[in-house]
Image (cartoon, rainbow, N blue to C red; front, top):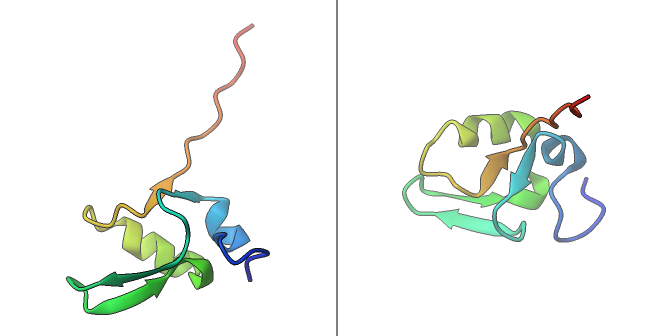
Length: 67
């Protein structure tokens, strides 16, 4: 479970960042309410596949330092 009332769960936050303050979102198009603070990684992976779901954005991989 998240450590703050406005944070993604740690396993979701490791892979995605929120484009809004994590809270409950009502998606009329899908006919459901999604609580970003209680989202599982499997649910997040499924939602991110939808191009109209812009509330979670995949984290970019860190660049390697140039030598």
